[in-house]
Length: 493
Image (cartoon, rainbow, N blue to C red):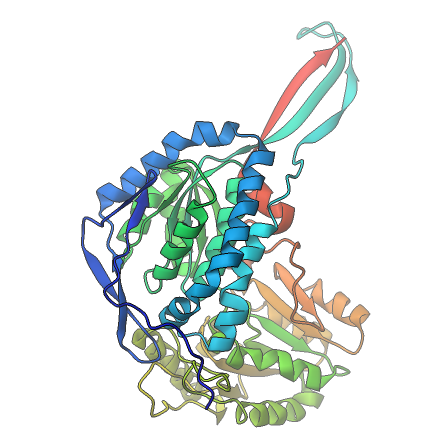
């Protein structure tokens, strides 16, 4: 066992809220943050009052005119300085983010930390997001003498954006919202997931050093839905940028409707992974196994719903079963560990319930499904075969190390099964040629489709069809997401 050596965490360290440029104590006390591996308390997060949530939104609103009018080049330069600081200092947060999330040390060091600075780096260079429109001649009419009708489309910041994120990648998810929103001239109220907010608070301290004016970035935390609900209902908040479950996303749409909140929501997924009869099964197995080995399946883009041609079915499930047996489950600080715990006891119980329901509905449990004799919230890598599309375990997002396998007869049948889902975030096609994968992939109702690959393009638009979300971000699409379109029109004689 090669355990990573990390600085011990100070359970008694005081964490504060950032409101209007001041770090303040929470008015409603604190709540415990638990390590999913040890089940021990590793810190105490501030419990913001509704009054403090409202104060944070008001501070962001007050700071908006000055930040909006700051030239984009200056805003982006500040984002670049934040990226520099994050690269210099985020390494010191490995122990904290690992302890909060339960992610393996390898995932913590390679994804949880460095990707944050990368998200900022993508927006350190100003981009022209305006769009001139070609003039056209207009004859004299009752509205005017005629001439050339001209227009210019510009993108304005939406205003105050509430950034609310999920627990699986707290720093990465939040960075992906903060950077483009700031680049477009918005001000922010940041609300991390209740399970692991401490590293986000620390990241806020680092970002603040880049020199953002008071009120441009505000941070509030809370143990339940109260703080987030207050942001959604606030008239000082113009937009909600949310990453989380489809159920919560639907509630945000409903609650935010009365104030016409602009929305960017990356919600649940049940990624279809189609394997054609001529695919490279070995290549697909490596991708599918990531459901087990990449943060214990707690990722919305995971290929959890495998749809394989009947002629390759046995080959695939045999190889997946063999791979599952090779994945070491255990202490996430052990560098040989591949599968760590899930986030909470409640979530572990939920995943186990889905596995049991699949077996009860007629699926064959090929591996996993048992609770390991370990102190944390662990779920064994689980493979369910002989599944049908009507099973709950096939239809619902599980967010754990569980793979379900269905058989298809041809490409048309595979597409039909892939689209038989409320979700459409990220799907995959493995075929003998990229051309065939392309033809199948473009028929799948999914915002993103990987073709013989798990690797997304970092500047491609990211978002979902159906219950998997609203809007797109990343690259220039991230700037578009945090903007309003304004058309300026005039007549030129």
